[in-house]
Image (cartoon, rainbow, N blue to C red; front, side, top):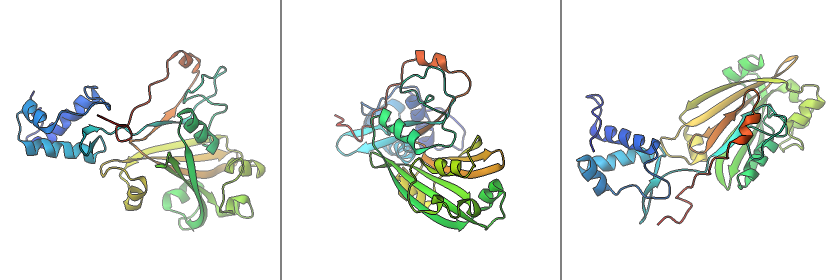
Length: 287
């Protein structure tokens, strides 16, 4: 087995890491079995032990591999939770389908997350915070405010089986939230959507912006991800017939979350078998 040549500027360990990524993507390695030991990779590729070690370090830093003391090196596969970011409601919903639910989840109610976690056999817990801050430029622009105006932010820190899963922040104009339960530092029965409905601001449409970026220091500390694992950031601007209602920014660790969008008639999807759940060797008793 040889390392692809690549460009002249690429160090050998980086080209080796790229070939290992290819083998992982093609399913040559599984989460249940350890990767070949360093001496075997050294023999397969005809490279020095240090080159192998550096290549494996790259994939460990990317969150693709994990070294388990006394057991070996395994694929790092966090259990991935499908979140139905938006999907129409078919006439005959298929059970446990991430695109299907009792209603579309345009406003991302907490009940959707709870149902998805229950279907996956996992426990969802939420820490809640409320704060009044100065609006960032991008948030102010989406809400039609001047940068620096006061806004109300309602934050939910979600954990699955005590593992950090997502940070969600809903941004409201101070005038909309004033004098309502949105100003209370607690979760609301029925979710924020219940209050918005009583205010006559039921959300009927939304635009999502999806980007990937590296976490900042505080985010990296909270998510406890590998140093090379990015965040998926979903910024949703919701609207009623009068204009923007709120901006919901949700950050997910890219190695343990998958956003699912459904469009059109999905009745035929019920004929497909559900995908098998991945196994995380860090949680299992690997040989």
